[in-house]
Amino acid sequence: MHRFQPLFIIEDKVLNGPPLMWGLFFFILGACIGSFVNVIFYRFSHKEQHLGMRSICPQCKHRLSWFDLVPLFSFIWLKGRCRYCKNKISIHYPLVELSLGVVYWLNFHYFHKTPLFLFLSLCLWPALVLISLFDIKSKTIPDEFVIFSLIANLFYLLIMQIFFHDTKLLQESLLGAFFLAGFFLILYLVSQGKWIGFGDVKLGVLLGLYLGFSKSLLALFLSYLLGGIISIGLVALKKKSLKSEIPFAPFLILGSFISLFWGDYLFFYLF
Image 1 (cartoon, rainbow, N blue to C red):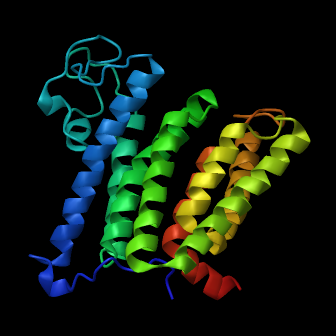
Image 2: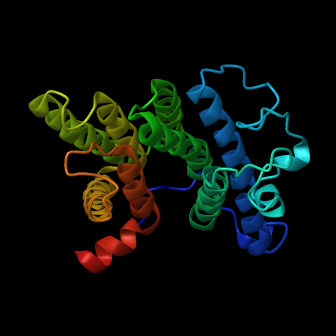
Protein backbone atom coordinates (compact mmCIF):
# COMPACT_ATOMS: atom_id res chain seq x y z
CA MET A 1 0.00 0.00 0.00
CA HIS A 2 1.42 3.38 -1.00
CA ARG A 3 1.81 5.70 1.95
CA PHE A 4 0.31 8.72 0.17
CA GLN A 5 -3.46 8.79 0.34
CA PRO A 6 -5.45 10.61 -2.34
CA LEU A 7 -7.18 13.90 -1.74
CA PHE A 8 -9.64 12.73 -4.37
CA ILE A 9 -9.43 10.24 -7.17
CA ILE A 10 -9.15 11.33 -10.78
CA GLU A 11 -10.57 8.66 -13.05
CA ASP A 12 -8.90 8.33 -16.45
CA LYS A 13 -12.14 9.28 -18.18
CA VAL A 14 -12.14 12.64 -16.38
CA LEU A 15 -8.82 13.57 -18.00
CA ASN A 16 -9.97 15.54 -21.03
CA GLY A 17 -7.69 13.82 -23.50
CA PRO A 18 -5.43 10.78 -23.69
CA PRO A 19 -2.95 10.31 -20.79
CA LEU A 20 -0.08 10.74 -23.28
CA MET A 21 -1.14 14.34 -23.91
CA TRP A 22 -1.33 15.06 -20.20
CA GLY A 23 2.10 13.53 -19.74
CA LEU A 24 3.42 15.77 -22.51
CA PHE A 25 1.81 18.78 -20.84
CA PHE A 26 3.57 18.05 -17.54
CA PHE A 27 6.88 17.45 -19.33
CA ILE A 28 6.62 20.85 -21.04
CA LEU A 29 5.56 22.47 -17.76
CA GLY A 30 8.59 20.95 -16.02
CA ALA A 31 10.94 22.13 -18.78
CA CYS A 32 9.53 25.67 -18.45
CA ILE A 33 10.00 25.55 -14.68
CA GLY A 34 13.53 24.28 -15.34
CA SER A 35 14.20 27.37 -17.44
CA PHE A 36 13.06 29.54 -14.52
CA VAL A 37 15.26 27.50 -12.16
CA ASN A 38 18.23 28.33 -14.41
CA VAL A 39 17.39 32.03 -14.10
CA ILE A 40 17.16 31.83 -10.30
CA PHE A 41 20.44 29.90 -10.07
CA TYR A 42 22.33 32.31 -12.31
CA ARG A 43 21.05 35.44 -10.61
CA PHE A 44 21.49 34.18 -7.06
CA SER A 45 24.99 33.00 -7.98
CA HIS A 46 25.83 36.46 -9.33
CA LYS A 47 24.13 38.31 -6.46
CA GLU A 48 21.38 39.62 -8.71
CA GLN A 49 18.22 39.74 -6.62
CA HIS A 50 15.87 41.15 -9.29
CA LEU A 51 14.33 38.20 -11.11
CA GLY A 52 12.26 40.49 -13.33
CA MET A 53 15.28 41.70 -15.31
CA ARG A 54 15.63 40.62 -18.96
CA SER A 55 17.85 37.58 -19.50
CA ILE A 56 21.24 38.18 -21.10
CA CYS A 57 23.99 36.04 -22.56
CA PRO A 58 26.50 35.46 -19.72
CA GLN A 59 29.39 36.00 -22.14
CA CYS A 60 28.51 38.83 -24.54
CA LYS A 61 25.84 40.40 -22.26
CA HIS A 62 23.40 40.77 -25.17
CA ARG A 63 19.74 40.82 -24.14
CA LEU A 64 18.02 37.65 -25.20
CA SER A 65 14.72 37.58 -27.05
CA TRP A 66 11.88 35.25 -26.13
CA PHE A 67 12.70 32.93 -29.03
CA ASP A 68 16.22 32.51 -27.59
CA LEU A 69 14.71 31.20 -24.35
CA VAL A 70 12.29 28.45 -25.42
CA PRO A 71 13.16 25.51 -23.13
CA LEU A 72 15.20 22.79 -24.87
CA PHE A 73 14.07 23.87 -28.35
CA SER A 74 16.21 27.05 -28.46
CA PHE A 75 19.35 25.16 -27.42
CA ILE A 76 18.80 22.58 -30.16
CA TRP A 77 17.81 25.16 -32.78
CA LEU A 78 20.86 27.34 -32.03
CA LYS A 79 23.10 24.24 -31.96
CA GLY A 80 24.24 25.05 -28.44
CA ARG A 81 25.63 28.50 -29.30
CA CYS A 82 24.59 32.07 -28.54
CA ARG A 83 22.77 33.64 -31.48
CA TYR A 84 24.77 36.87 -31.11
CA CYS A 85 28.36 36.04 -30.05
CA LYS A 86 28.41 32.40 -31.21
CA ASN A 87 30.00 31.26 -27.95
CA LYS A 88 28.93 27.89 -26.59
CA ILE A 89 25.95 27.77 -24.25
CA SER A 90 26.62 25.69 -21.16
CA ILE A 91 25.06 22.22 -21.35
CA HIS A 92 23.92 22.89 -17.77
CA TYR A 93 20.91 24.89 -19.04
CA PRO A 94 19.19 22.24 -21.20
CA LEU A 95 20.09 19.51 -18.70
CA VAL A 96 18.20 21.29 -15.93
CA GLU A 97 15.21 21.84 -18.25
CA LEU A 98 15.25 18.22 -19.38
CA SER A 99 15.65 16.93 -15.81
CA LEU A 100 12.67 18.84 -14.47
CA GLY A 101 10.63 17.91 -17.52
CA VAL A 102 11.26 14.22 -16.77
CA VAL A 103 10.64 14.72 -13.04
CA TYR A 104 7.32 16.47 -13.68
CA TRP A 105 6.26 13.74 -16.10
CA LEU A 106 7.13 11.04 -13.56
CA ASN A 107 5.24 12.85 -10.83
CA PHE A 108 2.15 13.01 -13.03
CA HIS A 109 2.55 9.37 -14.07
CA TYR A 110 2.82 8.07 -10.50
CA PHE A 111 0.73 10.54 -8.50
CA HIS A 112 -2.03 11.83 -10.79
CA LYS A 113 -4.55 10.01 -8.59
CA THR A 114 -3.28 11.87 -5.50
CA PRO A 115 -3.53 15.51 -6.63
CA LEU A 116 -2.56 17.06 -3.30
CA PHE A 117 0.69 15.12 -3.11
CA LEU A 118 1.27 15.75 -6.83
CA PHE A 119 1.00 19.49 -6.21
CA LEU A 120 3.43 19.21 -3.28
CA SER A 121 5.95 17.36 -5.45
CA LEU A 122 5.66 19.91 -8.25
CA CYS A 123 6.49 22.63 -5.71
CA LEU A 124 9.38 20.76 -4.09
CA TRP A 125 11.42 19.47 -7.00
CA PRO A 126 12.49 22.85 -8.43
CA ALA A 127 13.80 23.74 -4.96
CA LEU A 128 15.60 20.38 -4.68
CA VAL A 129 17.25 20.90 -8.08
CA LEU A 130 18.36 24.38 -6.97
CA ILE A 131 19.79 22.93 -3.76
CA SER A 132 21.78 20.41 -5.80
CA LEU A 133 23.11 23.10 -8.14
CA PHE A 134 24.22 25.37 -5.32
CA ASP A 135 25.86 22.52 -3.43
CA ILE A 136 27.78 21.49 -6.56
CA LYS A 137 28.85 25.06 -7.31
CA SER A 138 29.61 26.48 -3.86
CA LYS A 139 29.17 23.56 -1.43
CA THR A 140 26.42 25.48 0.33
CA ILE A 141 22.70 24.83 0.74
CA PRO A 142 20.73 28.13 0.73
CA ASP A 143 18.25 28.33 3.59
CA GLU A 144 15.65 30.06 1.40
CA PHE A 145 14.92 26.95 -0.66
CA VAL A 146 14.92 24.60 2.33
CA ILE A 147 12.54 26.84 4.30
CA PHE A 148 10.15 27.23 1.36
CA SER A 149 10.07 23.45 0.87
CA LEU A 150 9.58 22.77 4.58
CA ILE A 151 6.63 25.17 4.74
CA ALA A 152 5.01 23.50 1.71
CA ASN A 153 5.54 20.04 3.20
CA LEU A 154 4.21 20.97 6.62
CA PHE A 155 1.18 22.62 5.02
CA TYR A 156 0.49 19.39 3.12
CA LEU A 157 0.75 17.32 6.31
CA LEU A 158 -1.49 19.80 8.15
CA ILE A 159 -4.21 19.51 5.49
CA MET A 160 -4.01 15.72 5.51
CA GLN A 161 -4.28 15.68 9.30
CA ILE A 162 -7.11 18.22 9.65
CA PHE A 163 -9.33 17.11 6.76
CA PHE A 164 -8.48 13.41 6.49
CA HIS A 165 -7.22 12.61 10.01
CA ASP A 166 -4.26 10.78 8.43
CA THR A 167 -2.30 10.19 11.62
CA LYS A 168 -0.31 7.36 10.05
CA LEU A 169 1.02 9.67 7.34
CA LEU A 170 2.01 12.26 9.93
CA GLN A 171 3.80 9.68 12.07
CA GLU A 172 5.62 8.21 9.07
CA SER A 173 6.76 11.65 7.92
CA LEU A 174 7.93 12.77 11.36
CA LEU A 175 9.79 9.50 11.85
CA GLY A 176 11.51 9.99 8.50
CA ALA A 177 12.52 13.53 9.44
CA PHE A 178 13.90 12.45 12.83
CA PHE A 179 15.79 9.57 11.23
CA LEU A 180 17.50 11.47 8.42
CA ALA A 181 18.13 14.67 10.38
CA GLY A 182 19.29 12.69 13.43
CA PHE A 183 21.70 10.62 11.35
CA PHE A 184 23.28 13.70 9.77
CA LEU A 185 23.30 15.59 13.06
CA ILE A 186 25.33 12.81 14.68
CA LEU A 187 27.82 12.90 11.79
CA TYR A 188 28.01 16.67 12.02
CA LEU A 189 28.64 16.69 15.76
CA VAL A 190 31.10 13.79 15.78
CA SER A 191 33.17 15.28 12.95
CA GLN A 192 32.69 18.87 14.15
CA GLY A 193 31.42 19.79 10.71
CA LYS A 194 34.29 18.18 8.77
CA TRP A 195 32.35 15.29 7.20
CA ILE A 196 29.14 17.13 6.38
CA GLY A 197 27.75 20.62 6.80
CA PHE A 198 24.76 21.65 8.88
CA GLY A 199 22.87 22.29 5.65
CA ASP A 200 22.71 18.51 5.18
CA VAL A 201 20.98 18.22 8.55
CA LYS A 202 18.29 20.69 7.45
CA LEU A 203 17.97 18.92 4.12
CA GLY A 204 17.50 15.67 6.07
CA VAL A 205 14.49 17.18 7.86
CA LEU A 206 12.95 18.18 4.54
CA LEU A 207 13.51 14.91 2.70
CA GLY A 208 12.50 12.84 5.74
CA LEU A 209 9.15 14.65 5.93
CA TYR A 210 8.67 14.23 2.19
CA LEU A 211 9.59 10.55 1.89
CA GLY A 212 8.63 9.07 5.26
CA PHE A 213 10.77 6.63 7.23
CA SER A 214 11.05 3.59 4.95
CA LYS A 215 11.82 5.55 1.79
CA SER A 216 14.21 7.81 3.72
CA LEU A 217 16.12 4.72 4.79
CA LEU A 218 16.38 3.57 1.17
CA ALA A 219 17.30 7.08 -0.02
CA LEU A 220 20.15 7.23 2.50
CA PHE A 221 21.48 3.83 1.40
CA LEU A 222 21.27 4.78 -2.28
CA SER A 223 22.91 8.17 -1.73
CA TYR A 224 26.00 6.61 -0.14
CA LEU A 225 26.08 3.85 -2.75
CA LEU A 226 25.84 6.29 -5.66
CA GLY A 227 28.19 8.75 -3.99
CA GLY A 228 30.79 6.05 -3.47
CA ILE A 229 30.56 4.77 -7.04
CA ILE A 230 30.76 8.22 -8.62
CA SER A 231 33.55 9.36 -6.28
CA ILE A 232 35.65 6.30 -7.11
CA GLY A 233 35.02 6.97 -10.80
CA LEU A 234 36.15 10.61 -10.48
CA VAL A 235 39.30 9.57 -8.64
CA ALA A 236 40.02 6.89 -11.25
CA LEU A 237 39.63 9.49 -14.02
CA LYS A 238 41.87 11.86 -12.01
CA LYS A 239 39.11 14.46 -11.87
CA LYS A 240 39.26 14.38 -8.08
CA SER A 241 41.79 13.26 -5.48
CA LEU A 242 41.13 11.17 -2.39
CA LYS A 243 41.26 14.37 -0.32
CA SER A 244 38.82 16.30 -2.51
CA GLU A 245 35.60 17.53 -0.92
CA ILE A 246 32.59 16.23 -2.84
CA PRO A 247 29.12 17.76 -2.23
CA PHE A 248 26.69 15.26 -0.75
CA ALA A 249 23.31 16.94 -1.30
CA PRO A 250 23.08 15.96 -5.01
CA PHE A 251 23.59 12.28 -4.11
CA LEU A 252 21.02 12.45 -1.33
CA ILE A 253 18.50 14.10 -3.65
CA LEU A 254 19.25 11.57 -6.42
CA GLY A 255 18.76 8.75 -3.91
CA SER A 256 15.48 10.37 -2.84
CA PHE A 257 14.39 10.61 -6.49
CA ILE A 258 14.93 6.88 -7.01
CA SER A 259 13.35 5.99 -3.68
CA LEU A 260 10.27 8.15 -4.29
CA PHE A 261 9.33 6.61 -7.63
CA TRP A 262 10.74 3.08 -7.41
CA GLY A 263 11.25 2.55 -3.68
CA ASP A 264 8.29 0.16 -3.35
CA TYR A 265 9.69 -2.07 -6.10
CA LEU A 266 13.23 -1.96 -4.71
CA PHE A 267 12.00 -2.91 -1.24
CA PHE A 268 10.00 -5.77 -2.71
CA TYR A 269 12.90 -7.22 -4.70
CA LEU A 270 15.76 -6.41 -2.32
CA PHE A 271 14.12 -7.20 1.00
